[in-house]
Amino acid sequence: MNRAIRRTTLAVTASCLTLTLAACGSGDDGAEAAPTKSDDITVGLLLPEKSNSRYEKFDHPIIKKKVEELTNGKGRVVYANAEQDADVQSRQLAEMVADKVDVLLLDAVDSHAIAAGVRKAKAAKIPVIAYDRLAEGPIDAYISFDNEAVGQVQGRALADRLGDGGKAQKIVMMNGAVTDPNAAQFKAGALTELEGKVTVAKTYDTKDWKPANARANMMAAISSIGADNIAGVYSANDGMAGGVIEALKAAGVDKLPPVTGQDAELEAVQRVIAGDQFMSVYKPYPEEAEAAAELAVARVRGFGIEFDSLTPDKVDSPTHKDIRASLIQVSALTRETIDSTVLQDGIYTADEICTAKYKAACASLGIK
Image (cartoon, rainbow, N blue to C red):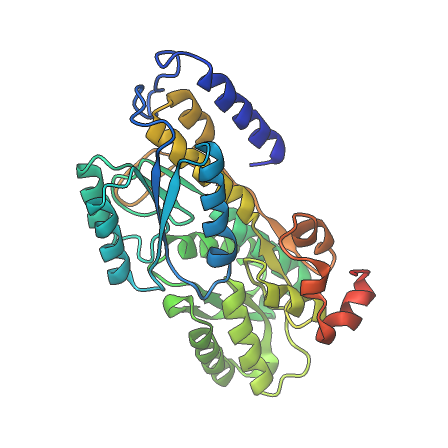
């Protein structure tokens, strides 16, 4: 979703609030016409882990701030992080249902395992919005980045970097956890760009997305294929890219093959600047988080036009079809685009990126 579309959304929201409640009724798939609350809203926010710095640094504080802004300071966010434990998240969701929050924003650890909790929330008349990962069960809406596009951006960048070497070039695919439906979409998108251009010599589904597991997988790949025979590595995210690069260096590789990533984590941006990591995918977290807060508040208030304007897309989960959705676009982060992505959007400052270890590399790129 670009900035022009976001401005249009806010304009629709403002105009809707000036109309009568009947005029702000539901579309065919939108929320109920009559709002249940105005400003005294409680949003339950369930996030999956802390190993990826985005959740604590961006998602939680941005959603909290936006909910407060939209409710004149009267709304609040109740937050829980499962730290990659699906059972813990199920208990957290059950506690929020028991506490009668008004709406749930759910980023599932395990999209299948959480479905029973989603059904219980719906039975208690608590709307559930899937955030970042598409949970199974009767969710009301889904907001995330365009996950196949993420994989396509990664795969295209890697294929372009490898050039015309053909199928003789062997790569390793380090995919994410099978419990995360996004991982399958990233992989599918990447393969549309890689198939026919390279040979996928080894592919791994990395348990819990953990860098240590990615490192172990990469060591196994090096042992099987030979370090000198690996032309590139598709890594689905930055944390795993770090593990992959550690394994390559431990194997004595001096000239690292191109390694992809995703999330534009600070350490990954620094690796990109230094030339250790080839690229990442920049996902504008502030845009996703603010849109999620708007959607949660709109769903509780029941303003159908507002709700519908925030969810122009539709997606299918394994359990439900035609789920209303908002899919936000992404872009490649390379040495050449750091200034126009994470710096321009204020994700990091030049001082945060260009620590002593990276000052010379930053200077060579004009980052100061």
